[in-house]
Length: 298
Ligand code: GDP
Image (cartoon, rainbow, N blue to C red; front, side, top):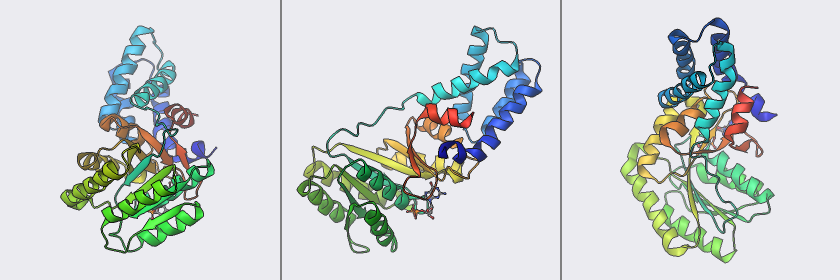
């Protein structure tokens, strides 16, 4: 369905290239591996993942006495899937009162993603509260309010320029009073001012520690897949300022750079938990490496 469709450009970019390598060689030699490597690097799989995957492929080729390049296709799919499954632990949504902090720079789709998450949890019968703690951006609150309304979630907002920690404090109070299942916190994404950002996130976390100790916490970084290697760089920088537990890759639809899903996971050791495949509420999917690889190589 949407995933297969959403990966059309990425498939054209990566899989078509791989298939021409499989078809263009009559034996498995260094040139063959080099060509594959080039396709993978150009396809945004990243150096780390590419080397790991190719090492694994070489081992499999040896072990299974594969001689024909065409027979490597299935093995490569297997290697990519294995590589992606590392560290992909399931988040326990059954747990009580998860607090989900969402970080990411402006324009990556953070507001949209929070709205989609809120809507999906609501559809699962969960009571959702959204904290508009990105008080730095003028339009952020308004846009988030629209999404929260659509998602039947309650929005706790602050005035523009007000203290984000105070918004979190109010949101925690509301979450406890109303027995919310999920508290989603939008946060400012000012990576250019890392020290301030780190302080701000720390302050929010301290309030949650103190006021809501029973809540289990997750920090998700939202990255725009269309920016390819820049997304990877952003993720690294966020990892320096926050304890990131998961990655959300937006705008996977219509980009040829979907290979970045493989790269971020390999480079950061943090699982991709969701991908955005469009602008609507339903266009956020739980990321499953198996499904992803299947959809890509369909
Ligand atoms: P923010 O500045 O990070 O809060 O970004 P927004 O949530 O405002 O999103 C920026 C733009 O990206 C908007 O036009 C969204 O509709 C769009 N967008 C967000 N996620 C996706 C996605 O998964 N696919 C597509 N095609 N567009 C998206």
